[in-house]
Image (tube, rainbow, N blue to C red; front, top):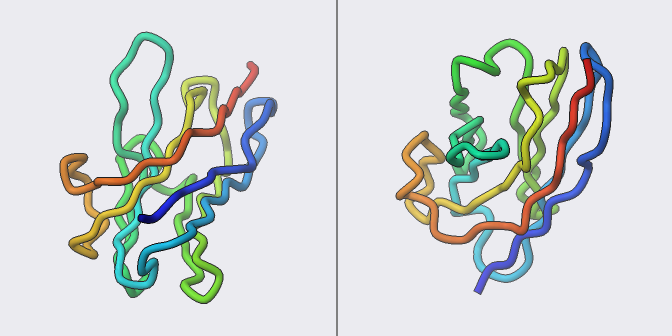
Length: 124
């Protein structure tokens, strides 16, 4: 059974940057699509970014396009989310998740294993 652990969250001023990491153990990481989602207080969890098993295709929510970058290192069983030009509305708990179909697309129902989340807080 795969397990995921996110890290890299914290407090940053608007316009700043953070780098999130998600390390996997167990399972066959190189075959999974991977996704990042976020949940703000009082709101539903929403898709942020996804990456195909090969790393050759990436997907982004419109709200983060041009500011966030998803990448992966299969040898290290790790997926990353580089968050640049952060805004206060990016404040949320960020979760990574595995997509066993390998696609890493937007649909949340594709994802079957989730990490515990890491808090990102952006001050204005």
